[in-house]
Image 1 (tube, one colour):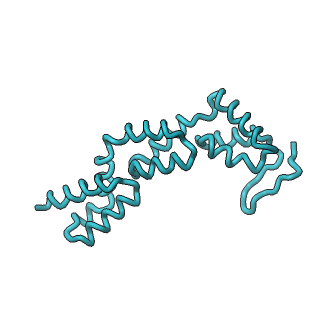
Image 2 (spheres, one colour; image 1 turned 90 degrees about the vertical axis):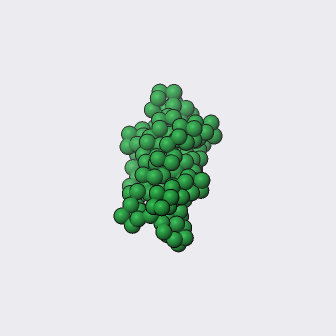
Image 3 (cartoon, helix red, strand yellow; image 1 turned 90 degrees about the horizontal axis):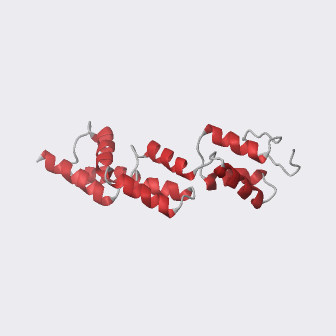
Length: 165
């Protein structure tokens, strides 16, 4: 079925002959999508929002779309290089429930310091430990930008300064 109101976005590869379900399955075959993300991508191709909601309900019932799988995949990909704050922000932007975000926080909390230490070592082990407030601030900003809390950053950098003494 060809949509007469279909307007391709500049630079995007569009296949106007695909049904809404075919588009959704094509997107899901490439990678997991959250429900909100999938709805946003399908919105330009739908006649009304109820059509998208019904399709997403069907996909979820068949197990083709799962926010739980999406969360697991995102945490697996990002936890090695990002802190809790950044991961939680990514999940929130994708419409993941507060309950699932809380579960992720509890799951990753115990490894936060080890993950921050690993990120710090990859970036700064060659440069060495912070020896002055400027270096401390630079390294702290680097870890903060990756979503690690100030408490964790302080523990990592303070321990690094203490190890040197």
